[in-house]
Length: 94
Image (cartoon, rainbow, N blue to C red; front, top):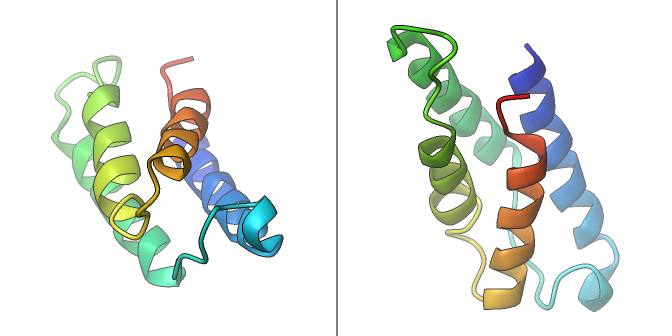
């Protein structure tokens, strides 16, 4: 549950940054509800596949979310770097 909350918080964060135009992100990216739906499904599949709940592949999950799911919309390297930084703070083992 905390991981799903962190994902929802991250999604709200990127949608909120979009409201500020070029001060939020350097371009306007088409994030939508499909992004969080697919990411939640991927998160569920990864957690179900993990034999031991203490050994969740965090690097893989952050890469899939930041570089593929959300990062697939992002074209600017600094925006992608910011997105990955947010994910590294929100999605971790602690």
